[in-house]
Image 1 (cartoon, rainbow, N blue to C red):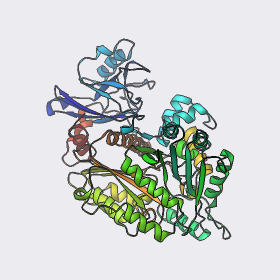
Image 2 (spheres, rainbow, N blue to C red):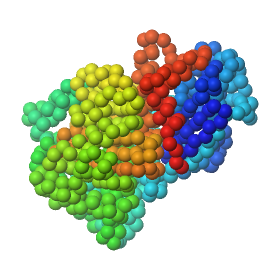
Image 3 (cartoon, rainbow, N blue to C red):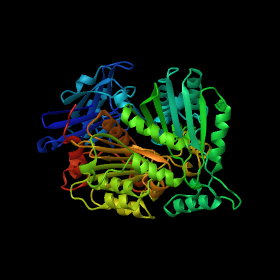
Image 4 (cartoon, one colour):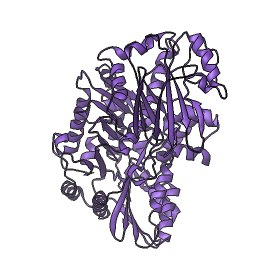
Length: 602
């Protein structure tokens, strides 16, 4: 949901996802004079925690010696965009944004009064916007991101230095509804007459396999195709060298495979060990298929479940989430359900193909016929609604489509775990006088050879960030989980979502998501899938707010690291903080205009 209000020279546009809210702000020239920032009050209008609170800030004035429980009441936000990442799905919230004037000492003193119990009204005025967050249990908005590694500081505030290992409360907090949402999707198959057809790369998490076993025991037909290919040592070491060549650290990719190694079989072995533990093999109503056909270097990279009723496909769950502990608790991932019989039918045909364990030639020919890639230019051929594309394909038409979508966007957001194809990188690096492009990568190597991320960041309108990890209990735990529970390709990978979001605040947004990476291998070699959504919807707002949640966390870490060698980050004592946001062509000005001045429909 989106809402926008203007009053006394202050404009606020609020975009509500399910677990995150973005607040875009703007000031008239007159209102900007002497403004030291914004105080933001949130009123929770529904359970579980109705009441009033000031949004927090991690920065404060030099004159403020109290570093405990800092809020925007005494440390106003000196930015024109802010995120609230502590909301609940399907709830109403009211935000009051107050521009602050006067000296820092006066702002601090007034803020302390406002922070006191019952003191919120001592700060009067401002502009008020009310929104309702999206409900991720409803079919039209069933998109769930887990918490991801960027939550490490929130973890310390909530759980201290406790080791997360084996702690159900911590794991539920990290899942953030992702595992629960997938289990709830499986539970929609209530008994005889229903079926669950699953194509899953890493098929290992006991709770998820138990969900299928329970479905089978209810009389549900359960069919699973799982990855069972074996890479040679040569394949593995070629993959490893590519990652090293593009900026990965040796500790992230692990040692080279031994000459006598013949596999990526740790994935296969773990899959089959999990199947045995869950007692799926030989279970009534369960059919298991090993996806093992050549080429040996290919990955069965899907992570989808088709829900059928009375033999007819009715919905599909897809996204980037493997069925592992690391995927749920360690990496950034998304689960995305589509309740569209036509789209579900395409996924069912894809499942039938994979369950037959076809060779590469058959896969490519079938996928090209089943889901032909829309022709270029994308905005002339892509239909409104949802389009599915399956790989492997015979040509790189998928890559060309993604590049065209990226090239045509004024506001572009990309999340990529691995090296992105050069055609897409070329599209997002083309000079632009008005556009704004944000790229979140797991490693700097996603941008290309060493140093390319710096080239990208020197391009007008481009901001690129690679995941930066902090030393704390959560990141230590996630590192161990990703080392222990993930396949060779996923060790040390913290950003695993694959997202291209073009013009999400405009009248004609486009979203690319799914299991397919933006690479040659994912397009021409691996079994994978993409969803392309076009048009305004609650789903766009969820992806927008969740992308910015992660992007902002990692951008702040990057700035922290850079500031440590110069001077600590803090608030400015005058209104000069806002100057860059009014410099024509600056990234800050483009951001202010994009998030506060864009079109709004509820």
